[in-house]
Amino acid sequence: MIPPATIPEPIWKTVPTEAQAAISALVGSLEQRIAELEAENAELRRRREQLEHELQKIHQRKKHTQKGRNDPKATRADRRRKEHRKHPGSFRPEPPPGTKFTEHDVRPQQCSHCGAKDLEPTGQFEDHFVADIPEPKIEWHRYRRHVYRCRCCEQTCQGRGDLELPGSHIGPRARLLTCYSRAHLGISLGKTQNLLHDFFGRTVSRAGLLGQLHWGGQLFAPVVEELLELLRQSPVVQGEKPAGASTARPPGPGASAILVWPCF
Image 1: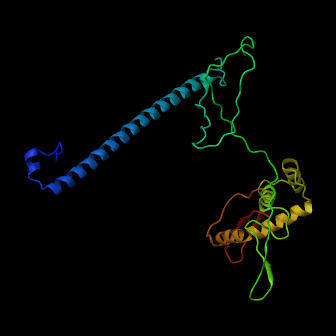
Image 2: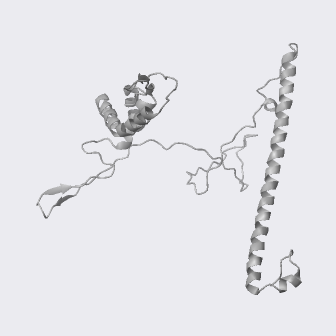
Image 3: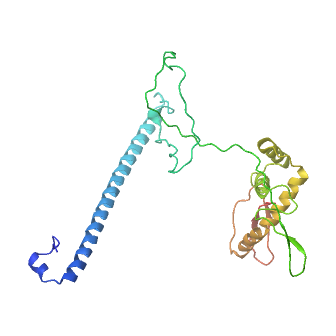
């Protein structure tokens, strides 16, 4: 077995074979770790130099701006131009690998320079990625509830689907959209009614929307009560009072004020 570079060969020959294998593996792992740390250190140094360069550019901009402000007769530069922007700009990252695309092949009908229609393909193309929301549409679900007979009591029974709401013809996602629009976004019931009709083609009465809000209030009531209990147990509760919030003071001497948002 070849000895490591840091161990002299005469000493290496006196080491047993099993120990040589263990030492070689340990030295190899240490050398690999040293290489990783050196690469990480080089990357940190590069980032530090880049930050120092950016900081220097910011200081130069400040000096130039203050100099122009102190001189009232100086001509002010147009800050909307690209060379005067203080931010590098941001671009949306490309879609992650494995994304399913709706393909669109865009081919020119005429030359954009001279207007001629005698074009020939070059085999080159440019991809333009656009993120859009899917077309809103109603999704119909049919829960076929099979009737079974109990062999013990001779009575018939039926099951219930995971997302099936007994006695309701509006699904849970549509109900949650109503609760989100009214309670979180603050949209009125009339506008929520228009939202469901214009985007999804579903007509729901105002009374039906009120029933959905009541359903949402009962659904989230345990969570709200748990949050209120955590606030009551907190020694100090402070915060700005937003629009539409009411102040509730729990019983007891010296109790702190709690801000309660009317959700449902």
